[in-house]
Length: 76
Figure 1: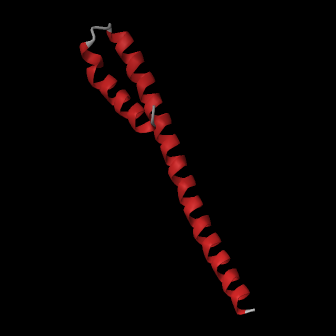
Figure 2 (figure 1 turned 180 degrees about the vertical axis):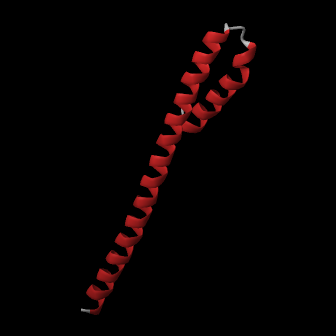
Figure 3 (figure 1 turned 120 degrees about the vertical axis):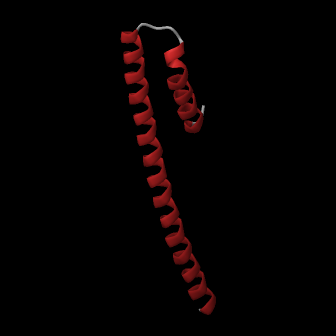
């Protein structure tokens, strides 16, 4: 299951939780645990986003380096 699907399922769970008929203490526990789960998913998404930006920057640098080396080889 993708991260997007997990976030949507957690949101749906929070939306329907008050209507499931659990006692208030259980509702509070489920809301707390679901909140922690959503926070963890947010952290994972942010880390992946930052990691993908690093990869894009490294690929751009690698492309320009490899491109300039091929130009020097052609000139020689």
